[in-house]
Image (cartoon, rainbow over all chains, first blue to last red; front, side, top):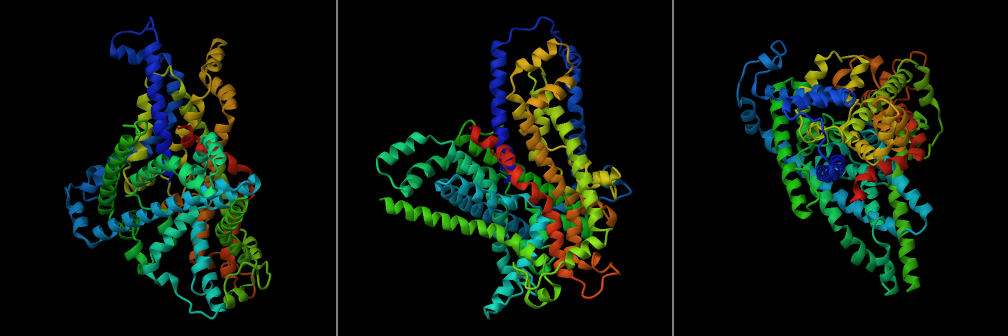
Length: 342
Length: 287
């Protein structure tokens, strides 16, 4: 969800950039002192704006160290990594680890779980937050509206560790509030953490519970920016509230829904590591239904110490994720030309 | 017609109240349980209203000074130092790239964008942070998070909205770029700076994955990570407290630690949430 917003902002940023550039090249008169040669231009530019370039250095160094250098580390996937030789000198093994992964039973399992869980997350998040946003928009008292919004947005601010503690307080078989409630009503209690068939649903619920307040805010912001004259016209024609929602607001929201969904689909290969790792952890009972690429990679790295295999799977995930991002970026561009960066 | 409206409205209010309760009840459950007597928890389970009120959990947490208080210190240090550094780095680069006179700004924009869509994965990242000597080092919880491309683009958007004349006239007066950024631009774009400060500080406060990768020493555990350790075995706090007599309040201690961990967020949340909403909707409403 976060990633989708990043792109959303970026697309706008990207568009702005383009427009700016056009205006600039169209209106700018050539500066007198720009040297013709490319090499000299670089030096001239550096000298002219040295203070500004100096300001970019910390961020550039940060990204080189924590983003670009690790990208070079992908070579570990093609090597038999050992700590002594490091990522550069470890012996080359080609596609060995990719083949091993594709042959193992985990390949199908974690890929399916990642895609399926994300699919459930996207559908649930969209349906819930859209419904709530439409209903919230109909609340006339602005005070009440604010109270609802404040309550719904709060879970977005807490860490996954806290979320996992809350889930524990509800679902723990001995002390959990849900079992306590069942017991007090004389019903059968359950060991929830041993029931894998329930956990895709539970994780979807938790994910929606934590994030919907944020998506509601985005949908609500779009609804509020809609033209009020249409509603006035509808009201004078005698339209009911429900008619207003289904015939005016919802149709106008469709572009936003499509874009938000396309952007969310772009992240479909990214597992929600925090959610699954903190709540399910190493509970072997549930892994068959909840183990995603990210949690599997982490286990391989920390528990088994198989760095090369873990990197290979991470690379497989990055590549597929990248292809999906490009595809859906293209699709959103087809839908609306101003979207999309590439 | 009028009646229909009222029915819809009241049903709507009831429904949304229920949804709000669903988001808030779990927090009340944790709060209630943290004030519950350990024996009643063992017998009846967690409950929103304590069956028997008890402060034993909080006493246990705060009597054993070395763990929770210490984790608070770690988290506070990380959050404050990290946010200050992050704001410095992010505002400098955002200011530079918001200036149209910078000819390579599109290249640099792309340079910052690429890590958002493509990453080397956690293994090479893990190896890098280990190589940098961040194991059991408080800087390991700060440095890998002091820059975030998302916050950069957010602030860039703010800075782009500022009129060029301000900077130009300051330049004519002979001010250097650092001076302009610090004493003019950051003051005018204060809402933007406030928004990303909140994003950064929340991220630092809630961070636990870096601790998972790097921290082995208990005294360097940040709050979130200590909570995780306590959730896994309550004895870290209660068990090591030799002076505590009677039942070790293991379950209520878990709940009390949750409350202590989200306490500061809970306190500032009503005041800061509108900045978050502003920051989050900035991209989506513009279109």
